[in-house]
Image (cartoon, rainbow, N blue to C red; front, side):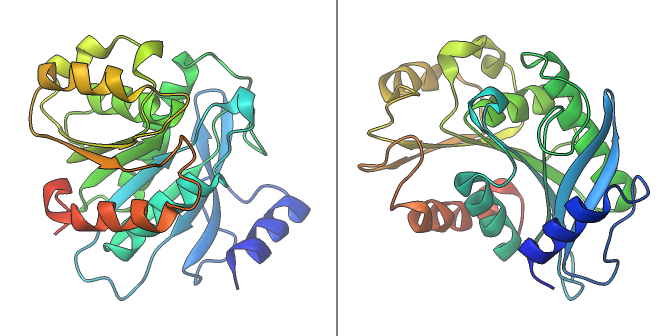
Length: 236
């Protein structure tokens, strides 16, 4: 059963029992879990043959600008983490797709992210977890890492540094991987480069030459860079 078939089944037949999957034996499962504003929908991908996997939650871009868990950059990040040996959860923030609630300008979406992390940890309590996000989702991932010191690392793809208080990065001891296109037309490269020295370690910055905000034509390179940083991220 492929991802599209599972998503169509999920949308046709409505919610499963919260915290349970539609297809319990599939490597790709549509899931629903409890969030602070109601049920949240997600897609869980795993391989039963993984020996000692890590957990990963991936956050999507801004809901008011058509951001969903099916965004191509989110999918690429999730695919890279799966290939690296992670059990990966993508999910829709409140008010997106079948997720209940209304957009909350980032405040509630931080809580949604923490709920997604909690759901995954409760399902796999013995495994360590990391969090990732693209654009607005990078901000949410960062805020989640700030609140959950047990997260092993955070991946920030095209983080919108001008839209939140980046000084929180000065004290965040969680391993931080930044991935940025040099031609990003939304999240300014110069801002990231000027602030990066002030961020606490461990930290790493990867620049993708010629890539815009949505990494058009460079998603394969984006995935490869994430895979190359498995050790830094604590995946291997």
